[in-house]
Length: 126
Image (cartoon, rainbow, N blue to C red; front, side, top):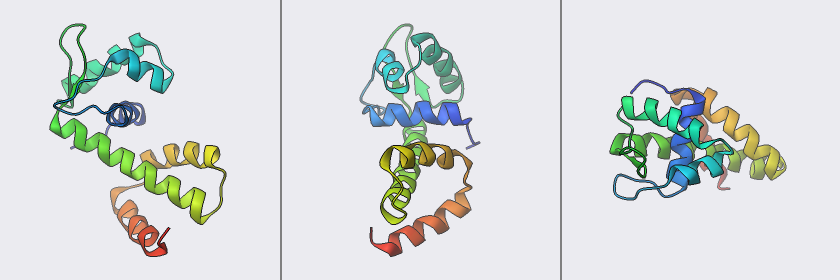
């Protein structure tokens, strides 16, 4: 699958964090609150995610993720958590700063580099 924009990755990540799956629907108002955006912004992002086959939403209905959308969002969330763990626990960066920086890094790092970093982080036994 082609890489999404950081913004759309954030939407998928937030939907997974809110418990969204192919079987469990979430409300767009909850996504908006989690990301600190307007409901209109969620609707705009949903248009793209639906077009890419990553999410589904009947007219003004609740959002569900497709299996592919869930897997993509889960991968972004896993990256974020691993980077956050490294920054906060291994490097001692304050949690709020580590969270912000993990969010920036999760979008920029290549899959190949992330796999190597993941292996290294696991070797640290954090």
